[in-house]
Length: 62
Image (cartoon, rainbow, N blue to C red; front, top):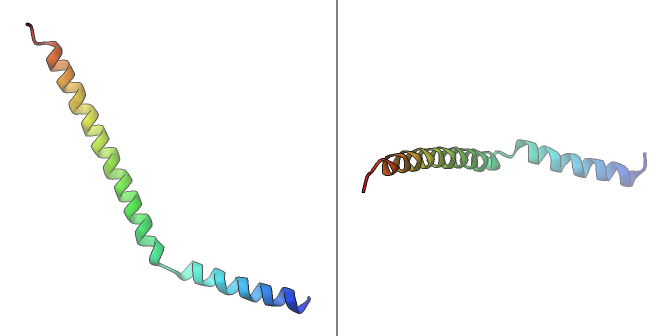
């Protein structure tokens, strides 16, 4: 194995170890998941309220 290839392998191995052990991005991913879930729940509630209002408003006689 050439010295250049060994150096590259060691260099990339060190970078991969740092990326695997870095926990800073984990909390960002958790916040994204929580935000997406809350947006989904808010959307579902909005659709349910809109449907209920439309149903009730169609029953109003003028």
